[in-house]
Amino acid sequence: MVMKMSSKVFSWLLILVLFTGESVLHAKDVTMILFSPAFSDGKRIPVVYTRPAVGGNNISPPLSWSDVPEGTKSFALAVIDPHPVARNWVHWIVVDISPEVEGLSEGASGKIMPKNSRELINSFGKPGYGGPQPPSGTGDHPYVFTLYALDVVSLDLPKDTNLSQFLEVLQKHILAESSLTGYFGR
Image 1 (tube, one colour):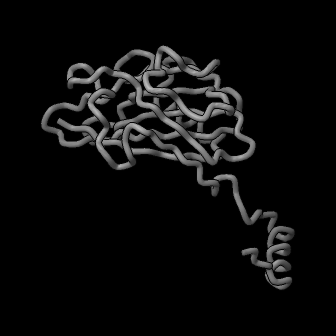
Image 2 (cartoon, rainbow, N blue to C red):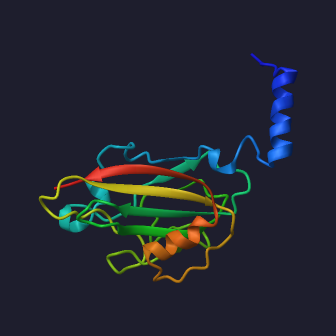
């Protein structure tokens, strides 16, 4: 079913665009989707993706994305634990992911990352993915996977960039973002 816009509504929208310089649709209004076949948003992260100290293999989970905004020149990915005990512990930051990439395979970190992408140093002091390993007795921790569609090919950040530096540079270039949160506790 195709709906026709009345000429009066169209005229008002045209006036709004012409006189305010505002577009009715903004790039940040695009709904980009990030998901994982390994766990659903708000659900538990399988043990295999955790660190060996909690029974896992410390392999990065598979991730996929869709509905990327027009004009995306690269992606960045961050995995952060914002739990009060963890205080924004960085588990993974990847920058300069090509706009043609539609996801990351299971175990990609350190092995089969997309060409030209770069893994920055995490809070464990190593580049790449560092899986969940929350302290005992602190409850479930949220692990927030956030994918950013960017308007630049490269963020040109040093490998040892911290989270606040990453976020500061990133803010100027975000076209869209999408998050997926998994939980793990012991």
